[in-house]
Length: 161
Image 1 (tube, rainbow, N blue to C red):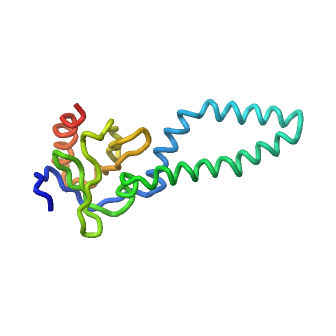
Image 2: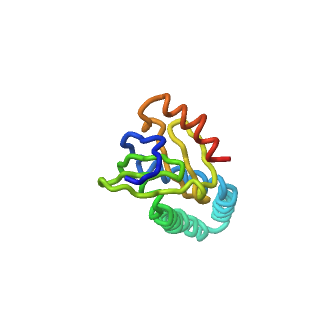
Image 3: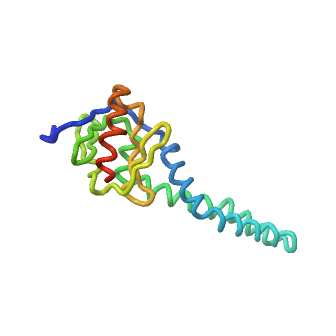
C-alpha cells in the first residue's frame, strides 16, 4: 500500500458497461441530436419523391449508425477510467487521487489535478477527466452514510475548487 493518507475506502462495486456507455451516448446524442434529426427528416422526405433515398436511409440506420456506435464504444471503453469503472474493485480516495484495488493489486486511476469536473447523479459521482471520459464512483459503495456525506459535502468541494 502507498504511504499516502487514505481518506475513504469504498466497498467493492462495479457498474454495467451498458450503463457506463449510456451516459456517453446520451451526451453525444444531445450534442448531435438536431443534426441527426435533420438528416433523417430530409432522407424520409426525399424517400417520398424517390424510393432510392429510402435505401440510403436504411443504409444509414443499419450500416453507418452501428459502425459509429462501435467506434465510439471502443474509443471510450479502452480508457483506464472506463476499464476500472466496469470491473469489480474497491476505490481508495486520497488527497492525490483515486486508486483502485483490482485483482489484489493497487492501481492509480486518476489524479485530482487531471479532473475537469464532477457531476452528481442520483446513484453515482461522475468524475470527468476528459470531455467524454469519466470514472464512475457509486454512492452505494461508501461504507456508511456519514462517509458519503463527508465525501460529498467536505472533500469534493475542496477538490473541485
